[in-house]
Amino acid sequence: MDQTSDSPNDLVANLDESVLLPQLGCPSGEVGVAVGDMLQRSNEAVINASFDLLDLHAGEQILEVGLGNGGHIPAVLSRAPGLRYAGVDISPTMIEVARSRNAFSIARKQVVLEVADVSLLPFADHTFDKAVAINTVYFWTSLAAGLREIRRVLRSNGVLAIAAITPDAAIEMPFAAYGFAVYDALALELACMAAGFNQVRIEPFVEPLTNPQAEAAPREFFLVSASASNG
Image (tube, rainbow, N blue to C red; front, side, top):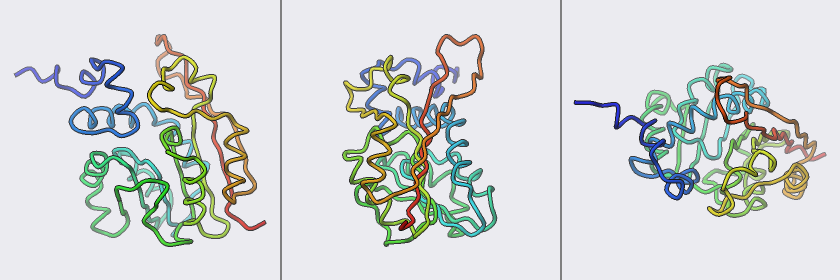
């Protein structure tokens, strides 16, 4: 039997835009699994840059909002001894896949994965040392509500990292018609401060060009870091 026509790459490549774009925010079903695989690969560089920004230390507890298929979790846990990771995603499909991929770490109580919305996180106040949201703020019902919830579950002096594509990079992408919200640097800074964060820093990040022959330009992102300290 020819398996190549059923590969994740083929499934995604053959999708109509009207089918693909809604799947980016909440992948579901067989198509969603393929989209999750594609997103994991395409976001590898910005995922690494975002966790670099967090500067993880031994024994810290990490929250990720919108973890996708969780393929990067083993690499995250290897960044420092004794890390514990909690991830939430609104997609039951992604949580199912991520639980399967990380079953060993879940059994060892290193990883907890839940279906949840950022505006109602299933965690107690002041649970986490670090939090991260990579390519997910576009899909939040309310940026303000999501940031307030993350601030609530972060400990004093905790750090939030956000990776978000720039408006200039998004201008050629038909996101707006499918409910994507793209923010400029000032909007992200002001939203973080209004949610109770301070020491907000924003730096540019450009994906490395992995294929010089590719027609698409490297994507440009904002990398945001914000402190949950009280002063």
